[in-house]
Amino acid sequence: MKNKKGNFFYLILTMLLIQSCAAIPPGGGGGYLYNDFSGPYILIDKQLEKKELKESRSIGRCILSLVCWGDITISNTAIKGNIREIKYVEYEYYNIAIFYSSTTIVVKGYE
Image (cartoon, rainbow, N blue to C red; front, side, top):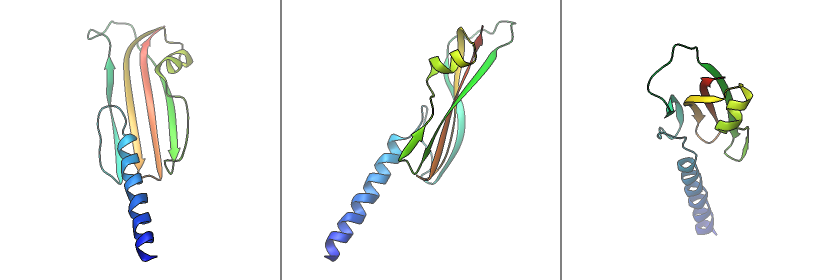
């Protein structure tokens, strides 16, 4: 019986470690217990025009890596912010082990 409990523990531990590898946002990994980083995801045009960029954000959140919600699609984020011409897409990622994570997609562009 003791061997079955040990095998079950290692199975759960392996599943959690594999899951946290799959939950890495675009652009890189980080620590197992805590992450807080942001960066550019897509750069559409290298030259900035003199018009001011509009910005729109969408957030997706997960609890215990089991329950996740939020729409972080680039197209819906742009529509929400009334952006017709996308110039940049950035992301922000924050997590604490498997307990909580959030990913924010930031779309910048023009009407």
